[in-house]
Image (cartoon, rainbow, N blue to C red; front, side, top):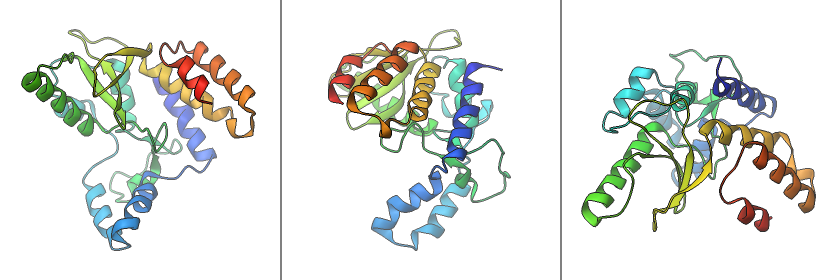
Length: 230
């Protein structure tokens, strides 16, 4: 069993133990503000046609216009959650229209992993930027998360690799910086951080815990900036 698979199990147990809010409830909370309770029936219809996990065949179909091979760790992650991760280890019934109640947003609701379809749409925008405006965007970059103008991406290859570095860049510059040595390392660090329960720590303790965790998993970029912001 791979390290990624083991890590997904650990995250699933964490979500169950801490009663994490499901993606379904998250979507209702977001949309109720604008559309009210009538949105719930529309949400159920929409989500029932979009399973939160993917098969290898579905991953290949969604990424058919990406001309490189995504790393094995990406397949392992998206087979278990399409931009989401499970709450607990019990697989819900495939015909359950409330299936999204068994999954939650990870690492957090402000900076989540994207669905594979959303990643492909951003990738196609990159192609347009490169072709129309001459932007220097490596076609191997495959986006996995976005927060305001900052993106994270893995790097595809001609022949499939087990892992890929995770790079960070801004959509105004497209200057990459390696953030993590692998997607697996990124997830490992995030679950270690939530397990550390930083809400009960002083600023000095928080900095020391984060520094230890980031160094443990080889975080490459942004460490000094993150620690200064605490």
